[in-house]
Structures are given as C-alpha cells and as structure tokens.
Image (cartoon, rainbow, N blue to C red; front, side, top):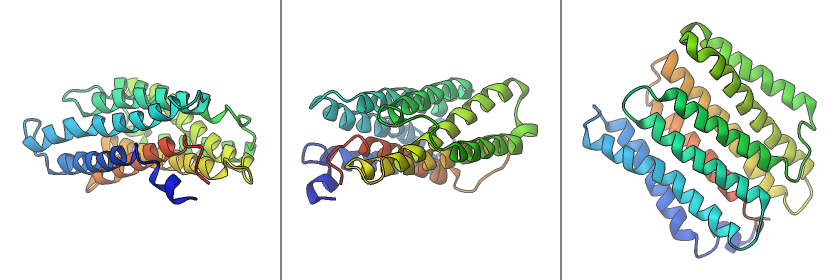
Length: 235
C-alpha cells in the first residue's frame, strides 16, 4: 500500500482527522452524559451523526472523480446510517425507526458488494452467518418486546447476509488489484455485526459496562473501513 493511498489523499486527510475527533467525542459524550439535558449529551448529539456525514464527504469526493456503482451504494448506505444515528440517539423510543434506517444501510452495502462479485458464492460462509444471526436473536428472544421480534429477525438476517457477502467478495477478489479494498469491506462487515450485536444485548438484555465505547467504537471502525474500501488506489 503506497504512502499516498494510506493517507487517502491530501484533500481527504483533514476530513479523516475530523472524523476520528468526532467519533471520539461522540463516545466520550455518551459515556459521560448523566441525563438527556447534560452538556455531555449535547456533545454526543452533535458529533455522532457528524462523524458519519464526514465519511459521506470522503466517499462523495471519490464519486466526483469517476462514476462507481460501488461508491454510490456505499454513499447511500452512509446517508441512511446518519439518519439511523439520529433516531437511535434521540430521547424517546425511536429504536424501530433507527432499525429500519440501518436495514436500508445494509441493503445498500449488499448492493455495493455484489457489483463486482457473485452473491452467496460461498454457501458455507452464508450458512454460518445465518446461524450466528439466529443465535444472536435467540439469545435476545425472551427479552424482546413482541412487536420487535419480527423486525429484529429480518434485520439480523440482513446484517448477517451483508457480512457474509463482504467476506465472500474478499475471497472472490483475492489476488486482484481490488483485493486490499475488498478486505477492508470484509473487516467492516464483521465489525458492523459485532457492534449491532452488542447494541442489541445492551439495550434488551444486559447492562454492559462502558456500552457506548464497545458499540460506537466498533461501529465507527466498520463505517470507516467501508468508506476506505471505495478508494481504488489501495494496494
């Protein structure tokens, strides 16, 4: 991987710095907020969706240099993710709205991941991730409100399919110039699945210490990896 590619180009370098700053502040604000009216909570509100939108800026700049169905789909996914960020952080119960937004994010990412690779090429990988998704839901089942059970099953299967396709694509593109970027997306898919699993268990089943650190840390890493995977200069 070249030095220039690693830094993602001089135009995007400051945007990446701002992204990591906003991601860190979003996590800090969530950890330190003691109430909805806390100043720390407002820091979280400001920086959480801003971090995702900064990644959208990075991807949009790449789109402006050439039409890429992959990059366009990732950009659309980031738009839905930013909306989901807002719904999940607002006071009140907007969890279902956030779930729908992130479901659309995963659909956009699945579309991206099938632009240059076959869908479900590795049946064993997809079967394994389907079982993992159902096991995660199974562990939550008795804690889930009845109205949330079907939406959570649909979401978990879509999330598992996205992660499985990301890994399948990385395998299919192994040895090609796009192999490194494909691995970035595969790591992103895995981290997204970890993040959402921790989020669900922290919300519906367990009180997880420093929950925001684990959920948002893996989430922002996943989104950053997907954004980086749109850079065709990565080698």
